Length: 373
Image (tube, rainbow, N blue to C red):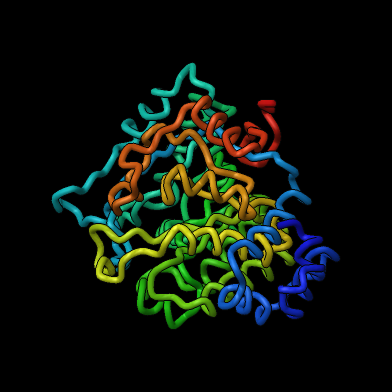
């Protein structure tokens, strides 16, 4: 269904026609309108509206990159209810890579066309900013052009505090070590009532937002995420999106927004199950419509699977992350369908072309490396 048909279709209610008209005229929708979309809109309507926004911004271009992950440790001082990853020191299943282990993982990609290393892990009680900063500096010696995207706001809060630095000092110090950008993890759900129930121990909503704002101010761009599909309601998702939209208005420092699906295996929320692929697509679409000041919406394929990632490209998504190369365990430990997440360039290109989109290899900051016509 085209957007023109939406506006002129007699079977569409006046309130939904009004929202479509706002989107056409590049007028921001309200939180109340977002709630209406979540609770009343048909998926076909959401897809048409989100796809219009996506194509206005990017046409058929669909982005991916050559990346790999390093997860230095799953030892963590926190106990988030949704997490399947965390272990304590000496617990079965715990790992703790040394500095040399981490550098050897980087060396494994010598001669391969990777452009980004993504480094996140548990909040280890004994490791501070300088421990990780020195590793980044060594990574840059091995591969100077490699973009280092590292550490969630939750990790940053702890490691900066442990180093007895202010947020600004800590972020500037990490930038001097070679940190290029930060991922969006640790956001979970911003609404304080839900956050208290899920992960009360770790960085607060205000702290997450403050860290990302401080990073943007010192010239470190970042991503943003939401963890959806657990105990939250639509109102909580909208509150989350609104806080991100407000901060992006202020700093313009976010590269992309990444909805992350809750997966149920091996954690204390397993009894609630998981939302459907239809709910995934609805969430992508409304995120694209609401976050008018975000250039990109990413579907992280290891969390939702390849088929849903393909479908998402018709629901506002223009990025499906990267090659990964089986270097992350966060979602596989939570029961994601890809237990060994890895795609080649050809896999990604074919996946995108199968749904009549144009694959674009990018770097972390969305500079185009290669277009696959």
